[in-house]
Image (tube, rainbow, N blue to C red; front, side, top):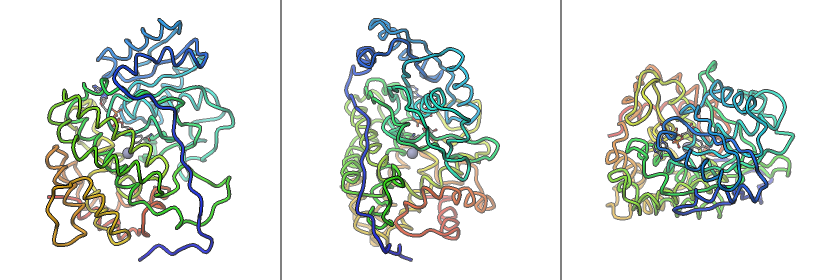
Length: 429
Ligand SMILES: NC(=O)c1ccc[n+]([C@@H]2O[C@H](COP(=O)([O-])OP(=O)(O)OC[C@H]3O[C@@H](n4cnc5c(N)ncnc54)[C@H](O)[C@@H]3O)[C@@H](O)[C@H]2O)c1
Ligand SMILES: [Zn+2]
């Protein structure tokens, strides 16, 4: 089934990005950067694991030298929930007012800080701003405060995006808040902060980079949508010439640095290229969008039973975001191949330039993905993180709630198609 072309095709795409500072030592300049914005009192948000590396306190001390009073909150939950966001928001309210926020951490920390910033500057409840149909999808009425995002993982690209992802506990569903005002004011990417990432985090977060690049590169082309009025425009506008550029470059960087960064965390050249790849993929998908692997990843993570991944906090079961999106990616790209064969082949060529040609062209990208996943120790399919065939209807139901993402798929996708993707993803090799 092909996507039906609209009567009045879209002719416009948009591109948004934060100010960006990249390089070793960039994190030591945040005090100066914030003083230029006139900030005097700043809340630095992080999680306990990262706080233990000493980096957040070092950044706070350095900000003090620029005359800024910085307080550290280290209560971020890994893979945030509505409840954990409320805890962070309450802390920030009790200890405020603040002039700006600094997020030092992975996607969990950066997203938590986006929610704190939103709720300290705007009226109402968190649920008012969460995407429909879970929440009301309201837009903030007031501008937000400056937010400096400092990623310590090489993964999400959350420092560039307009999205905050959370798990709504009562509904067992992962969803998000999405609005251009959530985008950080400044992204400070300092590759030296990523060296302490454990191998398991490097592997999972790296699969997130890869899926961002592949999904945005194969996303529905922007002119195949119905023409929007300016007030209807959303940050995700489908694949387009500018997003393509970022995705292609991210794939080439991953081809040479991903395995090396997982195998030897001290390989500074590989860490730097992974940090660039995460940023590039974030700048791409943050404007184009993602589709089936991410839509499937939400119920895989949200309905977790008893899986405890290596190198993540062990107190609660979890399927980390990058792992959750990777597990159905090979099958998803086998399914979407016929909607854009050239793009799938080009992506496979960039990711695995030296691999042999598969007899069936549709297998080229899935083969490149499973080879890599095996090498970096990603679990072998949805079955390996605790799901059975009997869970598939429930997983499909969870994916169908992600219509915002499925709308970016290069071809229409039905419940039966998704059930087939999940079934074939129970074991990948
Ligand atoms: N906003 C977006 O655009 C976006 C995009 C993709 C994913 N996400 C969200 O981001 C979250 C995942 O973020 P993530 O993959 O970056 O990881 P994370 O923030 O969940 O952190 C994972 C683990 O790594 C540890 N860690 C992080 N950096 C470290 C370092 N330098 N040294 C030692 N330990 C370190 C943390 O303490 C934690 O235990 C999910 O909630 C996901 O849904 C958001
Ligand atoms: Zn992601």
